[in-house]
Image (cartoon, rainbow, N blue to C red; front, side, top):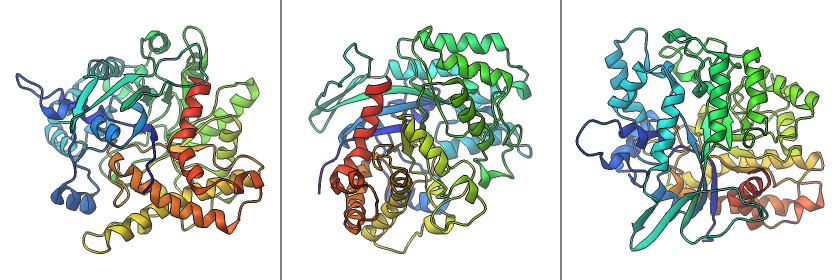
Length: 464
């Protein structure tokens, strides 16, 4: 088996650990440590297959470093309040249910129900990360992490043995204190823009931000993302809409190189209407910022084919179309393929069985679902005379309360996934289906190494 190194463009190692730091008691528990590794048990795997709820760690620093993850784009996410209120349940019962599903702890959920300041909560999560232990000994080996700092010489990044570089990012521009109108706090244009300026002045500012997320944020429309929870949670306000005037002000302020460097826009979770408006604005203004998707998947279709059925892909609006991939690649951006099963394929293709199938067969099948996304992107890019293998990365969304593919439970399976992808890549390249010679002559190993590490590293060197 070959050994690969990895970058993860979107993961949440602080989501659960920061949440457990709210637990009451004289000493913080092990679960509030970003190094804390909770591997799956027979019970938690049975529960995961049965309910989709993941009760083990997926992106803790111990697992990442022992799995040769070199870059972790740590997504800071103050949960939106809409997750924690159910109209037909008392708030305390809603809190208990949400705490069980998310594993962030009852005290954290109670805090999220009460507070009215997302920006303050973001600063708390960032502080938690900054103050976390920088070193840990695992099986007698010392591992460490640090924030990746921009350098004058940006042509390369120092290679350090058993070391993880952390790049902060943000999921959801509600952190600027928007989307709180239903909870008694109307968005203030001045406060929102001041908060962006504060972000840019941080010692460890975010590299990029997912503008939209799961609920109204007064800035732009979001895509449907909670389809299976329609009777429990309501994300209908402003769903599918475009940009507000305040949204355009936020875009301009985030991408302005003064003060500080730009904070790039992550397209994930935007409605299709908002994405189209952003592409048009980008072209009209001559903006040179790259397009990027930190954790996404493809519909397998062009915008003109939206009504056609493609059995290998999930056709939800939250996923991306061929034209969007082309714009992204032409801008020098990257697309992080997520490992949330429901985004990668139709329900029938990713449905788990508690009892059937061998582990080897299940792993190969899951890798095949992931490979379908890679193959489709390669063919779209190749057909437009673009490098077929230089755009995709892994953006797992691990520890972000996702439903992972069978047998690819966490970063601990990254290397297994890479080696299975090698099999698909070898067969595909041998078939010679790509038109451009520059895209056909790479080896399977080169293709997979670009996906696992090199494309993300190139993006960081170019834009950070």
